[in-house]
Length: 635
Image 1: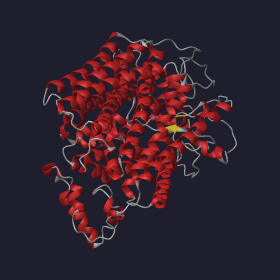
Image 2 (image 1 turned 90 degrees about the horizontal axis):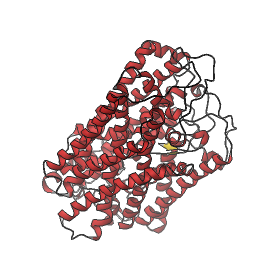
Image 3 (image 1 turned 60 degrees about the vertical axis):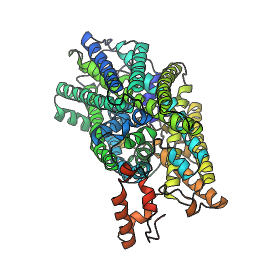
Image 4 (image 1 turned 90 degrees about the vertical axis):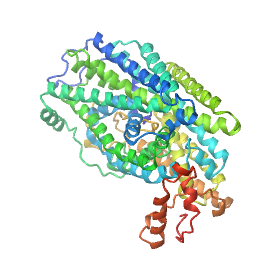
């Protein structure tokens, strides 16, 4: 999630727009561990730190080379794009987690907790439905149709025009985002340690491009596994050492309670409130669905699994891992608060990196471990973007128009596309460094399209009478609504000057102003930092502009569904005989499983779920050809 402007300023925006600056403490009541001077001495990498960072890049490259020279040597598109559909549950689940855990998330969550307390932890509630629905709705439909690109589904369900619109929207979304993901952590590292900015950008970009191009999806998934381990190790090291220096976890917890950083349950239903239980626990579900349900980067991992059961299990395995990652981010934020109290030594955009360098200043090598952790998050997100972009470009924009292309040429072209998107990523990183305030709008664009794409898939999967005209008009309406709210929020914030108040605890009072966001999908969920201003409660259109970023995906996807259904009914609903078998999920038929006919249907679905692996016939075709008498089969 990346978001809006000035008073609704996210961590990613702070990383890209700020410069390393130390601010004077705002209170005379410093934490004992807080700096006592008005300046913060420069931090620098030692030789062991550089060695550990280099080892991360070398190991990632070696994994790519290994899969380029072993097995089938990436000679077919099936192997290069889908890992020969041979992946097991554990590496797929860790790859799903790594794609979700971007570098901006590693920097953002602790800063959020330090500033506003643990209210953000309730986002974990949304993980349950956010993974349960993909596991039992989206994965069975996609897997049994034997797809390569998620957007193939849109052509099967509607027509080629809808498929191309979905593909182009996804490409636009990811190209905008991946340069920012590459540039933001490098800028923060440069600001705090003096680490060469473009050296870091080029090293990450070129290494990621190399192993993605050489090793295909297998290399991407296994480097994600390695990078996930590095991320866990880096965060754990910071928490353990930081808590020890603060006097132990008991002392950390005591200071967090005294500083009002342990949040209670906020049941305020106001959708303009930035973080409440409902925005985090309910609105967050739609964010998770947009990421784990229909995002090509994640769908591609499901489709690479050996069986449908392995794909479903990967969703179950990633659930506790996400909870652990969220808890680690929250604990790091509390340890930061125990060390500095209310007096952050510098801008929030660089707070976490400064904290890490401060904690590890007498422990050579550990700063390098955390930086490796940080850049592991960036590499996993970027490599997923490269591979998924190459896949949709090949499968949705090239193959349909050149069906006679040989397998060898198709594989070579897929590798060329992955390499080309790597160069585009570097170009976008360079562009991000020169965009200034325009970059804020570019960041917001990423989140504006996740909700409409989710709505488009839901329209096709849950409403059998929706037609292609309704899908096209609904998607356009959803995008227009998203851009209207996002740009309106951006412009309204530019028109109103903002003052920076002292940091206070926002968990003890309602927030009158909220953040319009972007949602990462591929991969990415991050925390946004909002500065509180005393403003009257917005009304009318202004209230819409102040909608909490966590409701964005729900609002925009609902717009697509409602408009799509209305247009479909006005232009003539799609008839059952025109539906491609297996493209509609029988919602009520599964909910009312206790009816005898529906129980029989569910049993038949289970018996034929894995048949395509042996026969190459989509299981849904077999299911729909059965003579089940359930009257709710298509509802």
